[in-house]
Each structure stands twice: as C-alpha cells, then as structure tokens.
Length: 444
Image (cartoon, rainbow, N blue to C red; front, side, top):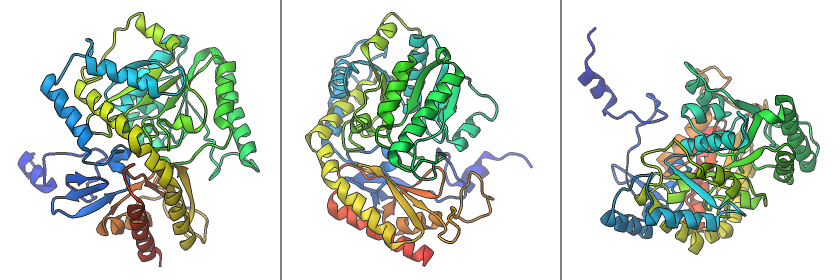
C-alpha cells in the first residue's frame, strides 16, 4: 500500500509526535496554567503534582519571571554563547553565590542531558581519565552521552540499540527499600553501599576513573534518599582516590528538597554540580555546570566545544527572577509544608495495604505499590509480560479524571508526587484525598 502522509496524520490527530510517546495513551492537551494548576483544552483544572516534568517549581504563572523575560526580550532576545552578556554574567555570579561551598565557576548549557555531558567532558579533561561511575537505575538524560550515564535500563537500552558510548560504569544504590545489601541498620547500609563504590573504583583502577556522578535524591527512579553518612563517606572515598564527585541536581536543585540544592540537605560539597529544570522554573530552557575553581581553571585555558543556545539571555533573565522567588518565599514554603506532605502520604499508605512505602524529601516523593499477597509488584515493565495490566495506570487515570496529575516512576510500580513549590496546605490535602479515592476504586 502506498504511503499516505495525510492518512497518517488524520489517524494520530496531529502532526506532532510527543516525547515518551505512547500511541495507546491518552493525548492530554494543556493550554493554560495558574499557580499549581493546569487547564486542558476544555478548561478543566488539574492540580499538577508532578510539576509537569519535575521542573515547574514556581508554578505556571509567576508574573515576576514573565516580566523579567519580557524585559530581556525587549532589550536583546539573543546573544551568542561565545560572547559576554550582562544578564548571563549576573546569573553566573548569582549561581556562584547560592551554590554550596566553593562552586564558583559556571558553564551554561541548554538541557539537563547536555549539562551532564558537559560535566563529564570537563571531568575527563581535568582528571585525564575516561570512566564515569553512575548509580544503577539512575536517570541522567537520554542523549547518547547522557544515556550511557543513565542507569535506568529502559532509557539506556533504547539509546544504545544501534550504538553505545564507552566509559560508563554502574554501581549499586544505597537504598533501604529493595536493597541489594544485607544491612541491619541505616548506618550499616551507608557503610556497605559506600564500601561497594570503593570496591568498584579499586577494581576499575582509580587512575582510570574521572568521576562519580550521582543524584542527591533519586529522581524518577523513586525519590529515595541515601542513609545518613553515605554521602560523607562517598566524599572521603573520592578524595582518597582522586576522583571527582559530581552531583546531578537537575531535579533536586532550586528548592525541590527544601534547600537551594539537594546536596545542601546532605551537608556535602561536590566538585561539580549540574542543574537545569527548576533553574528557570521551566519558563525557558537553561542548564549548566557549577564547579570548583580548580576544575574551572582547566576550562578557562580554552575549549573548542559549545552550544548555540547555551546561556540564552531570556533563560538567564528567567533564572534570576526564579531564584529571587525561591529565596523570597518558595523554599520557606517547602520547609513549612514538607512535613504536611510527608504525613499525608504516610496516612495514605496506612489506609492502603498495597502501598508498601513512601520515601522522599521536601517536595519530591515516591509511593511504592506491591501485591500484599506476594510482596511483589503487580507489574514491573522491565521484567513483566507486556500483557499484564498495571493497576497503577488505573490509579493515575482515575486521579486525572478527578483533577490530579501524578507521575509514574521508573520502574512503574511506583508513583512520583512532586508538586510545585507554591502549593498550599489545602491543595496538598486535596491531592492526597484524590489519591486516596483512586486507590479505593482500583484496589477495593
């Protein structure tokens, strides 16, 4: 049969093919937003408890950010990334001011994937070594370089089907739930997991390892935090073997965990820090790498790489305004309401035996769901037959029908709850009430 592009378009309903496209899934159209709410093409309101893609930290209509972007557009909308610009310079200085410790040098990028790729390029140059260690089941992006760093197999397998990049080595996560270790306490888990990273470095050959790249709190893989002292020991190991420690703060940065950066909740200073998403509250694409001056010095000696839209002035203006919002009241709001969100989620878990744990920090949480009769997930798409229905999909659909958006985790036996930082207590309770009803409908 001859190919007919018009026929194909009429079947799909649009010429646009979304990212993470599921042809069997619903085609959800968002046309407006206000605070923590999104509105579809019919004007129906939805509480956005996934912050769109863990990025709309300041909500969907922050006028101060919009005004800053408009002012920049009226002055000059674009400046080459190879040139200086006052807004870009001001943002770099501001980031150095709010970053933990001596992270004072900034190189801008466009997306989180590209920021992580820049970071490993810089690390390899600084250390004259090629290997980067990342945690199994982590997510660091889906471009070829970042996809190799990603420990989540669905993304990595999709990226590496026809070609793969070298130099990425995986280590096991320091998580209490479904742990690969046999620790009897959080302290023992921290020691075993950190000793495991040391084992990997030693066996790979310390002189071949440039950096350890890790999320302070797991992102789409489940919101789990490291046990106390894990990051302190990881910092010691990196220092002992002359390996850089890079924090992927693409999700955890800019208030999500209750401080400006997630590593500040751990009290550990990395050598480099990557950021994106919340830096502009997603109002414009912007990302980058913050680094210690000794790492930045090697970049200041000259580089032959760049990205056209890195450090876009409109994105930089948005970021300056967004950071002001975070410092002025949004981080304080997270600190004040994070206990409410945690308590509401734990109450939800207590009401439903299918919820085996909730885990997270600040405004980033995961709800883990398993069959209480078997102690196993109802479905894990990484290992299950594709014909098996996933009841969590029904939970998200019912929640959506009731006006709440939450995310599916990786793997898909968990939900991600990640509201904008501007939500209030009433909206938190409303969201959990909707989830409670959705779980009742699906499992009872």
